[in-house]
Length: 255
Ligand code: G3H
Image (cartoon, rainbow, N blue to C red; front, side, top):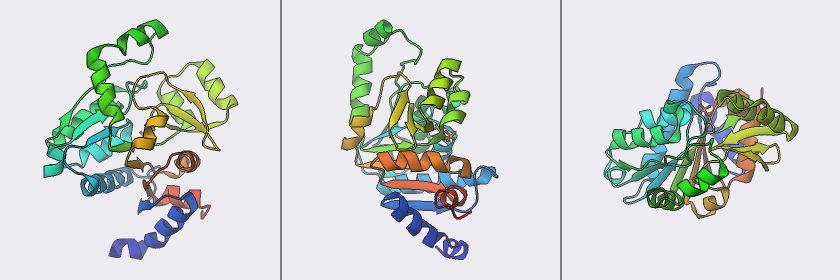
């Protein structure tokens, strides 16, 4: 668009797409670390793209966090969305309820007139309770729809920020630090090489399930997330990234 040309963002999108090896990169102006409207802009861009990608009878799995919440807030009804089922990518991962994937999936359905399913599997379970719970037929059914997601939409967090936000124990914080975790996405923590170094035990989408997903969309911005975005995008077969100028320039070291 003209706005993008004026800000020089079209070139930045091409550069970032080549650098990260991601098919489609959308960059909104500004830096989400500095101003709140930037996250809203990413949300709008995310909603627009989801609308473009949508087909009837699809399942869309969503992760948690404030950026994906911003996507949900910008969504509107379309014929394809009305025939879409929104599911949480994973069970609770220790977030405040309005940042949880369950809540965001239900909000997307409400905004679009689509359907949703919830996954009620808390994180802090003993192994035994967890194994019993995930054998429940109702839970199995939801897990099955998550595995059949056509689209996955997820945020990316800085590892330490996320661990603190989730009130993780000191032992977990230390483990993350020792293992060089830099980024986090749907309960998985990654090091700079994009290797998984820690995961929150909860049911739902597993890394291997992502191979079957048609479109993986990451929405994350703010210069403080540069390292996290690079790490995660290097390991996921990410095909779309929606970010902001702040993160893009920091990743490309154009600051
Ligand atoms: O997993 C990543 C986080 O959910 C991102 O959260 O969008 O609030 O920064 P955020």
